[in-house]
Image 1 (cartoon, each protein chain N blue to C red):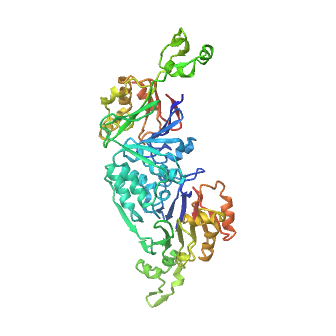
Image 2 (spheres, rainbow over the protein chains, first blue to last red; image 1 turned 180 degrees about the vertical axis):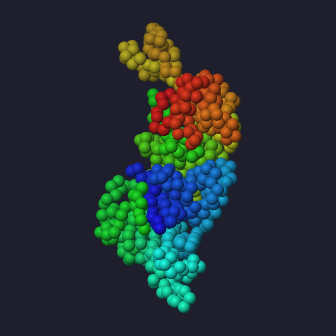
Image 3 (cartoon, rainbow over the protein chains, first blue to last red; image 1 turned 90 degrees about the vertical axis):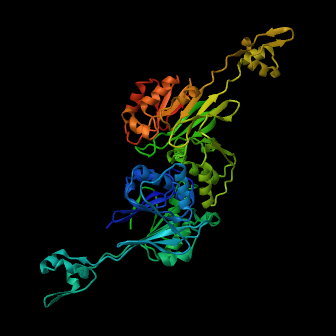
Length: 302
Length: 302
């Protein structure tokens, strides 16, 4: 099953050095989830050959422009392309009003349904759930309401061994019970579950930690995730600047990764003052070795 | 004196084929004027090495997204870069409200002065004037209020021949009179103006005709301009579609250029249905020979 994230942009605030503002696409079993949508996101989707039409859920972490100025363009393009599938949009209070005022003056009445779900950003809450996946918010500490998003795969049923099913001529109606781990009776014979199934894959998880001050309050929420994206706007020598602007440094992101015992760390939201990103990577690795730069175009398997 | 236009984007509605939505920069004597500001304009400015800080005047033709979705990003970048010069923004009613709602939720209080000038789009009016240039609106016929912009150089004074001034030892105080064409008296000697000056350059003009139905009502406003940009969203075989969507075709733009006796025509705002633009150029040229494609990155001297 596919579970991966593609980086569309990871620069902070100002587009610079050819880098775009924040946006990522999570692909879970060919369902696409867009995380933030900075200016130019729809063009980046096209650059990296990701079908925008396949995105049904969009999550906006907060209302600083580098995280949502591309949203109105994407939503308008869906309209012009006569999209029929609904779009589910999750974001803080204000997003609805911002979109409505744009659509009012352009006299746009969307041809598709746009469901806007307001999220509160002060507590972690489950905002979307399917058979396979649960998505919750992760409260950040930022200058305005802001939250990250946690993707957790649900435990899958046990994997059926097809040849054994055929061999014992087990009826299809027994499959659901087998998946839950039950043994099966055929006449007077009992076949133990472990002969017919194997362990399911271990559920994976991805935490997207958008703009935030160094913040230990969400450690319990993200504990042990397989991959965490955490912003590193600045290097350690600018930690004063990070504090004033409610951002994090390389060392702070590394510390969060270590304390939360995550398996892998992606860093991004780089200040436009940094042209060469290798120093940010090196500094983060000094605290947390399994780190990679969230550079645009890169795909990370979770 | 520099008087030229650089195309930053000229695709209609949807960004496609690697083409960006509408934006152009007029450079008049190193004063930069931005015409429309589709999504990604600030990135395009950087791509074509045009200093965004040198733009002091921005004109938005109408409130369809492909003409202004990049504006909020550009204005925010000026803020983050601690701009000190004011920005003068000209656009239809609604633009102020759209910007304000974004800035309110991001808690942004601009560090520079943003003067928003509301334009009415129903009559041609002079909206900006300097010693060298006059800028007026050109009413378009579109689904929502929309106008183009006409740049007219003002007549310059006669050109002084420096060597003659030195030879006759003419005082500096006489220069303004010489520029207006007056003769000069030195003691009892009268020196005719034409011995000391040459004709000034002929004032040039540029008409930017944004989204519009075929519309002869502005022919008198743009008559004889040196260069006109006119939208050609569609080719002639889609003229029905052009009418429904309040756009123009190649042949219609050519006809406007011909009837207004403009010297040169630029065409743009190409529908995303066209990958190869040479056919649009060819069709327009069948009516008006001196036509060029307004392709991004191209610079046209006026």
